[in-house]
Length: 209
Image (cartoon, rainbow, N blue to C red; front, side, top):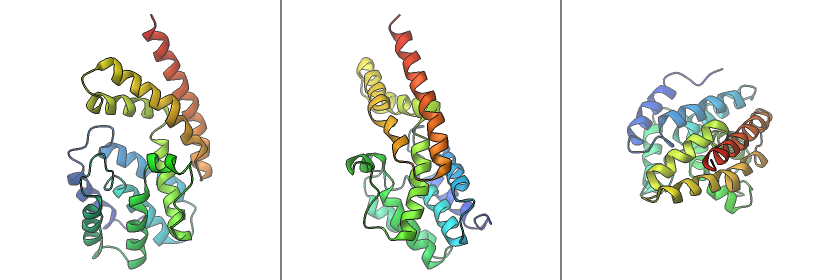
């Protein structure tokens, strides 16, 4: 059963306003793609509230990104206030507990491990959203998003920004495939990893000409 229609569109409209200042690598297009992956991951789950929480957490997963948000705790509090009249207590708990942990850099710092402070149902939702977010960091999409981010934040030295993007792809984002929890994400990650490596290799060959 899909997420109740009154909750998902309302949260999405609220999120659109919150991410207006994000560059195209972390905008509503990225968020929508993450949500689509999550819906595929949770399609076979038992428990409507778990499925709903995963979708809503995917919608909100950029709210605590320190690259774009000055006060992540305040953003999370505002999310809680927004969800209070719309979602059950368990759904609110799951979303608010999971969203602050969705971060590939934090995942890398833990050697790929998931947060150990999450309860079992929270961990399930975390893995669904983390899988989806990492998939969008891979493949052709991951290449484009990485170069967009570097173009905006990499500074005036174009060569340095280019190298920074290439290094991030080949040294860090390739590791995403090792961290996937769901069968869907594992299968999709294999395809995207091969595609990403091919694109990076071809870019390097063209730059050498």
